[in-house]
Image 1: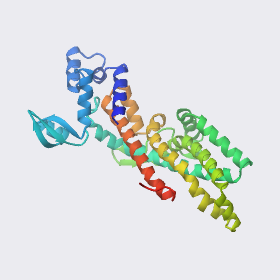
Image 2: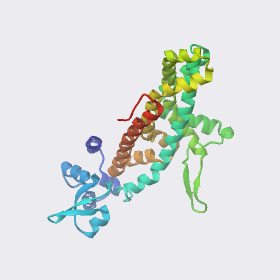
Image 3: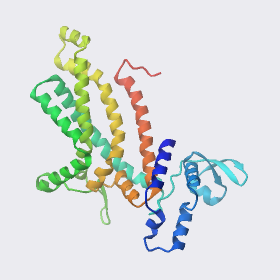
Length: 336
């Protein structure tokens, strides 16, 4: 995580743009700009800014001992060091330069939307991908196999931003009278009279767009793993014992072929949270990706850093979860 913080911090300071000027506007006076830079801590040296940010993120940090700081960080005092205290606290992601809202609050509002999008896209990709992969392996070298492979190659070759534009135009504009789908729109919206409105149809197009690439990968991985397993001796023994075709394919072969697929699913699910940036932007879907892109355009460093740290954390958690899941899927794998 520290490596992620270092890389993003360096890149953010190399990129052009002044957060203070973005906040106040291009015609702001020098005194106002200096006041805002002091408020954000941008008047300090780069190393000082970096270590102050690490101190905010660390669960154990050094802070002033006063009521304002205690309310800001919500810390529990461990012991005093001069006029400061060493305190135990939750990581503090700071406030947005533009909206002055806590980054944690912004993430809490946007992450569920992106999580639903990524989860439904992964479910769509997994179900269709495993089905097509098994179908392709069982009917090797037939037109079914060739069609599935062609679909997989097309899915891998088409970038998400390009596929999103085509899908939005075709299903949300050309065929909108038949599909009833919109070119853009978010899952949740707010109406002053009706309150929060959930529009599930706005999830379909970004879900399919986001799930195309992992679907293509899962098709190829499932096909390759199934062909490998179907050539094993125990599968031939099962056939010799007279087991039915479905029992051999789904009970014996598919279960042992799922390890590489599970690895791909875990990696892709975390990637979908990060890869949803362009898809959300294209479809006007209010989620973590769209919020981060907007924050990047406005040089809103705390929001960008908070989003990236969240995604990095998700990668770590998912990889740990998958290592545990292996032991339940494959009896040959044992937890240490």
